[in-house]
Length: 105
Image 1 (tube, rainbow, N blue to C red):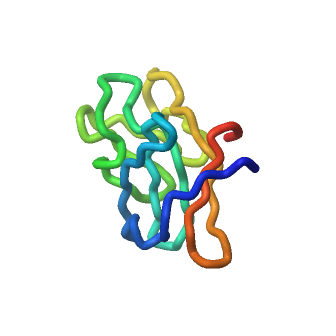
Image 2: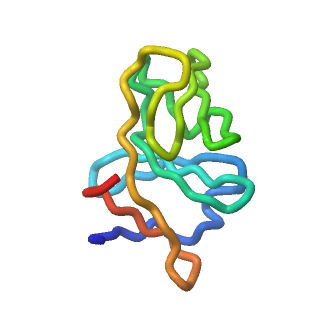
Image 3: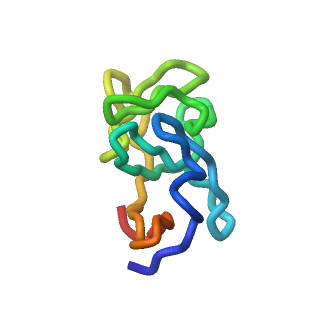
């Protein structure tokens, strides 16, 4: 994994998302209340809604502009015909730093 550091996991509060600029690419990182991390493209493919500002829960994000849901693990839309989100592999290192791989989902 050719990972890039995003900083400590505490930058993303549990149950929320945050946007990051990673080498000129905007990504959204979501932290579930149980601790799982997910990373997707930052903007909704429907109307470019800021996904990090959406409602997060149950492994999904709801776009704040139109209420469409996406599965955070796969990027697949739930119940609508929008294109899937691009997803990225994200994990924590031993020190609690987030590492994202932009090359692989």
